[in-house]
Amino acid sequence: MSELPPVTEVLFDDSPDEPALGRDPFEESMAPDPLFERLEALEGRLVPTPRLSAVPAAPASRPRGPRRAPARRAKPALPALAEIDLPEPSGWIDRLLGDDARRVLAALNHLVEGDGPYDRFGFSPEVAKATFPFAQALYRGYFRVKSQGHSHLPTSGPVVLASNHAGLLPFDAAMTIVDVAMHTDPPRLPRAVVDRWAGSLPWVNIFYARLGQIIGTRENFAELLDDGQLVLVFPEGMEGVRKTIAQRYRLQPFRVGFVEHALRARATIVPMAVIGSDDQTPILYDLKPIARRLGLPVVPVTPTFPWLGPLGLLPYPVPYRIVYGEPLDFHERFGPEGADDARLVRYLANQVRRAVQLLLDRNR
Image 1 (cartoon, rainbow, N blue to C red):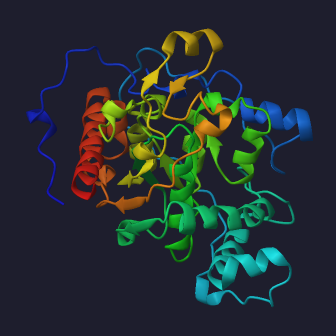
Image 2: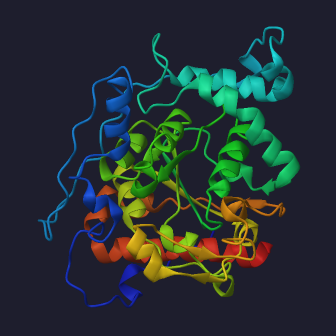
């Protein structure tokens, strides 16, 4: 991929230097994680390890200077698929899954250390196994997913997968999780960063956690990358979800926090595009005044909603195409200290946005 132009040649705005995450949802990290609160109320704890304490939000300004990348913790190594010895199928789930999916799920079992039912982020292999037949049916039969560019996905180490986002309900995230897990060896489980609003929904937040997804706070993001995980982000945030049909496949402004974290953790950023999610639930109009009154991120009017009630939110069976772009190793050029330059972080986030938009335009 062609090298980026020197940053000094780029025209930045004249906004004062401030933490690049200053306007991100991560700035709310002082507030309790709603997922942790719900899980603790129901079960007493999320994972066998103690709960992580919240970190204060970054101040409006801070001294500049080099920072060390977080020390890597020892983490379980996942086996290659060829190393998995499968027992004979037992039960209807095993028969529905097939040997390929069973090997992937068996490898992901190694994310859980010791005898606990969950890994340190709440992922449950049992819940993943029970859910996978349904996800696989959507992947193969409903959305008929085709994908390319899997060679661009690093096989190990921290990775940030940055994608466009649309469709009201997060089927684009679900299909990406299935696609990455089924096309990497050893398999990798994408950890989608979930909006804090979704994390406040009873039962839904627990379900997300059991599938390995996590609330989008600074602390959680940093912990995932420190653990060498592959993190799936949608930098458009809710603005991507509420796009109307006139804005389909036009990326909204990116939040920039994922770049700051990638630099600090020396993580590779892989741009990706999901073609199809903008067509699954076309929004004709967003009733923003009603959404604000109800405390909802969006109240859409679609060809089927609200006319068919909740069923009107179900996606149309449109074909999906997932494309992974060339990796962006910004950390190799700018180092972890680049995360302290707010203007640089904004510029690099814009480069990722351009890469995702280019993938969308080329593959529609």
